[in-house]
Length: 289
Image (cartoon, rainbow, N blue to C red; front, top):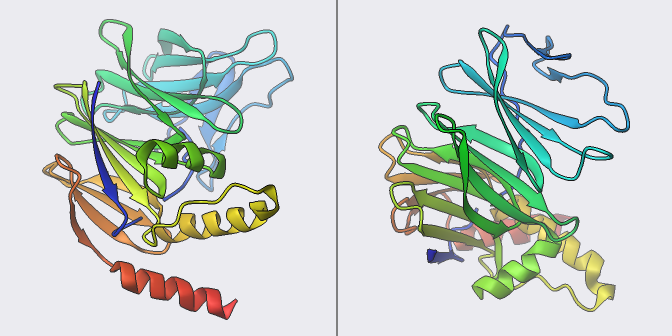
């Protein structure tokens, strides 16, 4: 697989663990013996799980609302691994079922509903994600890629020709990722041109100050965790989207840093806040603590 790697230590946006649950208001879907519904405050309602029962992640609906994908994490006598179940909404029936060896935690349908992409992770501390694409018309799956960290969001372009993933990186994953990329990388955006899945664009999100996360000696662990948490809040994106024409990728951080990239080359096109301004804002807030 040929990778194109773009490092961005200048315009740097990060993180949110997104649940693989999407509910249409007022829609209630009952599947098998488990009831999934929407409460008044919009939260998902799931049945109580017994010790040896699988852990259900919830439902993700296709864009047209005809299909629902359910992620079920297996453990106890059923595990390890996860089940990916594809249901028809009306009538309510199971259409397909796939099994993966890792913990499936996020998925997304293509705009036409013909493909489902999923990510499952292995490892407890330093995690690795496997990205898979499932052809729902044929009932087959293929591996698109693997990466360090956890995929927290998938987005497609409107025509389904491109797929992007936002990669969440924890403290223990930052070290191998930084070793792999050679930069102070704390997150990634991965982009696939689905007409040629062999070529992957990696946009590395880095600490603009260029300093790598220090993990040794252990006495500095608390300091490293604090600093990494600050990097996450300031510069690592939590939101990811394509422009309407699919030519741009837009990321946004909790601190409001919005960055636009060329989705074909990974080049930074614009950033709401300059590195100097972001760093000054960082230092001012740190001085006030």
